[in-house]
Length: 586
Ligand code: OXD
Ligand code: MN
View 1: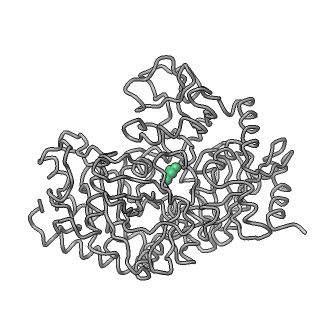
View 2: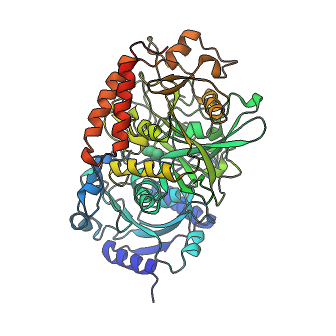
View 3: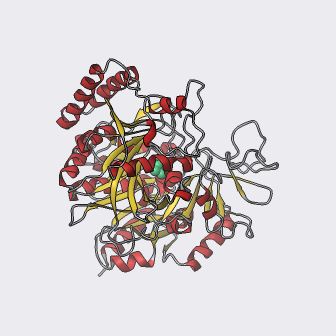
């Protein structure tokens, strides 16, 4: 008798017709063999074995360099269940349309069966997925990004409790590219792309889109959030989870080297992109990082912005679409001031400075989380870590102050539901356009966002001591268009203010949008920031916020009557607070 997994593999092989099937065990010998094959067939370029041992560069097809949200669909039985922010296709129609693309797509290719666990191997909160793929590059990435191979098969046994994901690079033509999620069946189909978020099915497809659907059914949360621990001088660690849209610095914040280290404040990393959070028996919210690695944006990463990751990526790392130096080392814009001579660009051609960038703006490194010096000793705790604060944030040149605290949970859900950010290169489409991205889940929530807001409100009611909710903006610019806040390691000063608020030690001014720090409540010693800049950073401009409030109203209209009444109330209350405050609160 076949196990459910064996039956699904047989069925997938009948459809895709591979020349051979390889069950991946996740071992070193397996990856050594695959890497050697990929170097031979040109999928991988081996980097300098002395300075970057076991590191490889992959150049993807130039039309396959980012997530393609327009080609990503949620295929639920009812259209209204995916809401106005997702693309929808009926399940039968989606299968009829996409099955022919899988038919025979692996002829004369190898089919890899990749069992993996999302979450620590021993955690009751972890879940199993199995990806079938014809891409050895995907296998190599999945091995770094999840607990892959034997460990997952051992945990699964003969059970049917896994999320199947069928993936083929197909012909890489965007015309024939589809990323499909069947949430009722807990099934993923992805064809036509080899790029990270479209092809590493454990990440966005399972750990966010499918898992968010499961989380609503089972009363937990699957969020696009980093998780960090802030250690104070007494050695106590307070855990915070933060949601920012793609390429807004989640990885850098999660791995920060604190500017207040000499005063005893350190930051420890639990995860940099996704958090799964459950209500524990004692009523606290406990987070695990379902991933095992970082798939981080390379450009802009350097010894100042993220020294920990610069340290981590010197061995056993896969680089995608970065440039390569003469000595076969990876390079990208922002790594150091000047591009070295004789670079090979991300297309594999000699780079001529002045034209396009040498590395693609969405080029990436894939590295195991355990390689970061900042990794917390609790990052694999089966029970997860207790969350005391949520942080929402975006990239806003104006409007949002450096930091503010919501009045309560319901208001915090409103703050998260209405957050906005200027778009980045992590997805295809225009860069720099402001879009509403609730809880940074716009491209990742697997169901109707109105129901997702209701789920957040419901979670708050179930939590004994709900985390405090904050909003930050590291990207505010002054009248000269320069950033007002230095960011990176200095962001710990804002985390410290949050900790002090949690511990009832820091002052704040009440404004129409929430509690903003008083100038004296932030620890700014050793930082050269003028009082004018600080005032600008913390300023809540009533006129800007009236405009913001109108934009929120428009955004909420999309959800019609499905929008929870509590959020309408919050919107109304904000409008009233703004109209009651004729003078700007400085
Ligand atoms: C990512 C993304 O890759 O959000 O994490 O795009
Ligand atoms: Mn992400």
